[in-house]
Amino acid sequence: MKIWILGYVSGKIRHSFIRKLPGDKVKTEVNHFDSSGGL
Image (tube, rainbow, N blue to C red):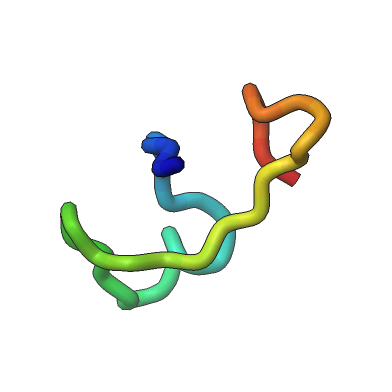
């Protein structure tokens, strides 16, 4: 089963010169008990 997650850049990556483009693969962690938010 695939689940789509909408994310945004924040924290240290937002202030650095690392660029993320739509379609880039990233690692995320999602709480299995409450999938409405991240960890």
